[in-house]
Image 1 (cartoon, one colour):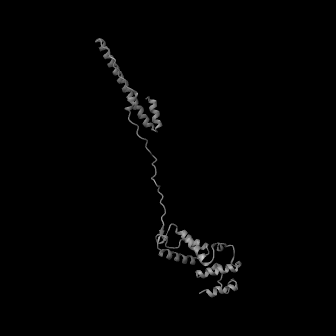
Image 2 (tube, helix red, strand yellow):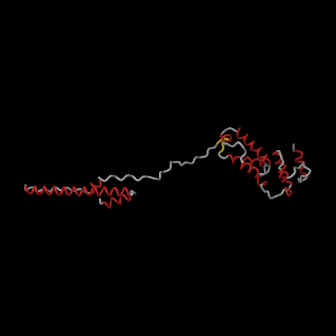
Image 3 (tube, rainbow, N blue to C red):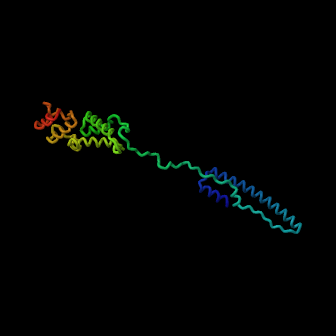
Length: 229
């Protein structure tokens, strides 16, 4: 194998210039030794020929050093170092685990939870009261159903259930463009029902039905007066 073939093979295998240079230098050194050895062998052969001629003996001894044998003496090329190690199998992300409420780290009503409750027409005091109910319920609950992956989503479902229990759907309370002065009797009935269920009247609805300054229809005021504590 010629030196050019060896170099091409090294380049194809990804050897560094330093490695190729070391192989070339080693090859040249071995080639020089081989040439010197051949010269020595030729000289020895010629000496034997001359001696054989003088003794009427013909010698046909020939010493040949092949390039293949020379290549075997070249130090092996070290493997290419991998500077980009593969990441561990499975990655580094960890799957979120379900936990009970008391292990969630939530001890007070989070701001985003309160904001969601207010978006569904609950006052701050009502949201705090619902959070207390929520906390007591899930702390006391047993079984696998008491562990949740997303407690924020569980809270949102809890608040939406407040509307269902009070007979008011979220879609009917999210329309904040309708002023209280334009409420229909049906809307007033639902507002009174929500206030009775929550135990308090919301200030943004104006004076409560039992207040002399209220704008609640007269025929509906008794619903609040009769049932309010």
